[in-house]
Image 1 (cartoon, rainbow, N blue to C red):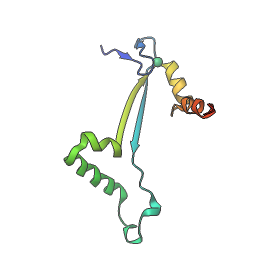
Image 2: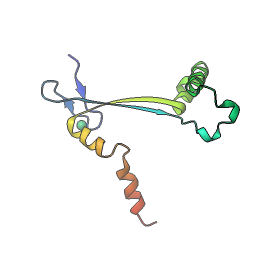
Image 3: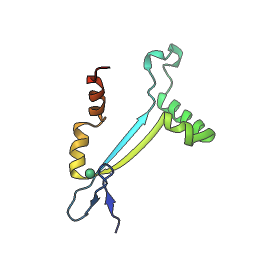
Image 4: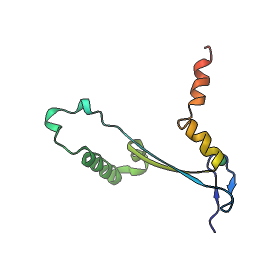
Length: 102
Ligand SMILES: [Zn+2]
Protein backbone atom coordinates (compact mmCIF):
# COMPACT_ATOMS: atom_id res chain seq x y z
CA UNK A 1 0.00 0.00 0.00
CA UNK A 2 1.22 3.48 -0.79
CA UNK A 3 1.83 5.62 2.29
CA UNK A 4 1.52 9.36 1.98
CA UNK A 5 3.02 12.00 4.17
CA UNK A 6 1.98 15.63 4.44
CA UNK A 7 4.22 17.87 2.36
CA UNK A 8 3.89 20.68 4.89
CA UNK A 9 4.30 19.09 8.34
CA UNK A 10 5.83 15.81 7.11
CA UNK A 11 3.36 13.83 9.19
CA UNK A 12 2.64 10.40 7.79
CA UNK A 13 -1.03 9.97 7.00
CA UNK A 14 -3.01 6.92 7.87
CA UNK A 15 -5.21 6.11 4.87
CA UNK A 16 -7.89 4.70 7.20
CA UNK A 17 -8.02 7.66 9.56
CA UNK A 18 -6.90 10.71 7.66
CA UNK A 19 -8.33 12.52 4.73
CA UNK A 20 -5.61 13.42 2.30
CA UNK A 21 -5.85 16.64 0.32
CA UNK A 22 -4.11 17.23 -2.95
CA UNK A 23 -3.09 20.76 -3.91
CA UNK A 24 -2.28 21.37 -7.51
CA UNK A 25 -0.77 24.62 -8.67
CA UNK A 26 -0.22 25.84 -12.15
CA UNK A 27 2.15 28.74 -12.57
CA UNK A 28 2.75 30.26 -15.93
CA UNK A 29 4.08 33.44 -17.42
CA UNK A 30 1.24 35.83 -18.16
CA UNK A 31 1.11 37.50 -21.52
CA UNK A 32 -0.11 41.05 -21.05
CA UNK A 33 -2.91 41.67 -23.56
CA UNK A 34 -2.14 45.42 -23.75
CA UNK A 35 1.21 44.71 -25.34
CA UNK A 36 -0.39 42.83 -28.21
CA UNK A 37 -0.35 44.80 -31.44
CA UNK A 38 -3.39 44.97 -33.71
CA UNK A 39 -2.17 42.53 -36.29
CA UNK A 40 -1.61 39.98 -33.53
CA UNK A 41 -5.16 40.15 -32.26
CA UNK A 42 -6.39 37.23 -34.30
CA UNK A 43 -3.65 34.95 -33.14
CA UNK A 44 -4.38 32.14 -30.77
CA UNK A 45 -2.39 32.93 -27.64
CA UNK A 46 -2.73 29.50 -26.15
CA UNK A 47 -1.21 28.18 -29.32
CA UNK A 48 1.57 30.72 -28.94
CA UNK A 49 2.34 29.58 -25.41
CA UNK A 50 2.28 26.02 -26.66
CA UNK A 51 4.79 26.94 -29.35
CA UNK A 52 7.06 28.59 -26.81
CA UNK A 53 6.88 25.57 -24.54
CA UNK A 54 7.70 23.26 -27.39
CA UNK A 55 10.67 25.37 -28.35
CA UNK A 56 11.89 25.42 -24.77
CA UNK A 57 11.49 21.70 -24.50
CA UNK A 58 13.73 21.28 -27.47
CA UNK A 59 16.23 23.78 -26.13
CA UNK A 60 16.73 23.46 -22.39
CA UNK A 61 13.51 22.48 -20.68
CA UNK A 62 15.02 21.76 -17.30
CA UNK A 63 16.47 25.20 -16.77
CA UNK A 64 14.32 27.58 -18.77
CA UNK A 65 10.97 25.79 -18.75
CA UNK A 66 10.15 26.44 -15.09
CA UNK A 67 10.25 30.19 -15.67
CA UNK A 68 7.42 29.95 -18.15
CA UNK A 69 5.35 27.07 -16.94
CA UNK A 70 5.40 25.05 -13.77
CA UNK A 71 2.99 22.56 -12.29
CA UNK A 72 3.29 21.73 -8.62
CA UNK A 73 1.50 19.08 -6.61
CA UNK A 74 1.37 18.69 -2.84
CA UNK A 75 -0.26 16.26 -0.44
CA UNK A 76 -1.66 17.87 2.70
CA UNK A 77 -3.10 16.53 5.92
CA UNK A 78 -6.44 18.05 7.09
CA UNK A 79 -4.77 20.49 9.51
CA UNK A 80 -2.29 21.77 6.96
CA UNK A 81 -5.05 22.04 4.39
CA UNK A 82 -6.86 24.48 6.71
CA UNK A 83 -3.69 26.52 7.14
CA UNK A 84 -3.01 26.49 3.42
CA UNK A 85 -6.51 27.65 2.47
CA UNK A 86 -6.25 30.60 4.87
CA UNK A 87 -2.94 31.68 3.45
CA UNK A 88 -2.19 30.02 0.14
CA UNK A 89 0.56 32.46 -0.78
CA UNK A 90 2.37 32.33 2.56
CA UNK A 91 1.69 36.01 3.21
CA UNK A 92 2.35 35.82 6.93
CA UNK A 93 6.04 36.12 6.35
CA UNK A 94 5.69 39.18 4.14
CA UNK A 95 3.50 40.87 6.74
CA UNK A 96 6.08 40.37 9.42
CA UNK A 97 8.71 41.95 7.20
CA UNK A 98 6.38 44.85 6.46
CA UNK A 99 5.96 45.72 10.12
CA UNK A 100 9.65 45.71 10.93
CA UNK A 101 11.12 49.20 11.20
CA UNK A 102 14.21 49.39 9.10
ZN1 LIG B 1 0.35 18.44 7.63
